Image (cartoon, rainbow, N blue to C red; front, side, top):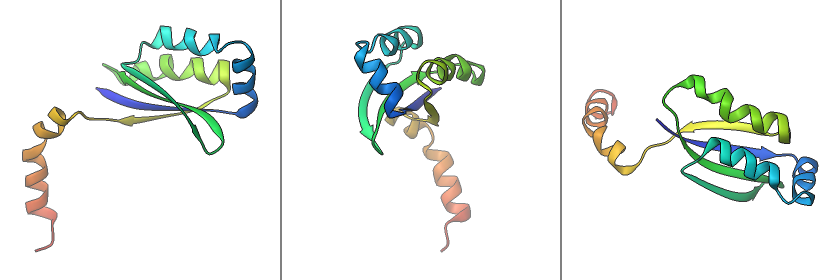
Length: 103
């Protein structure tokens, strides 16, 4: 299953990583191997937005712990779908709409 993983790094930890050439970020990304990785500023913090594929929830610690330990980061996991996944869900969406949508 595909997840959007948001990693928010405190300013001080991010500053240390920046002074060291972001080697720790590269090391973590090399280990996790995300489909995509984007870096933004959110709420005044360096934030990584990652797209990762997981077979099982037991993989969450292997993705989150390096960020917790190396960057003192907050990590969020959000299930994500591609358009083809949404298309597969069409009949379930239609069924729910018929049952729960007020007429």
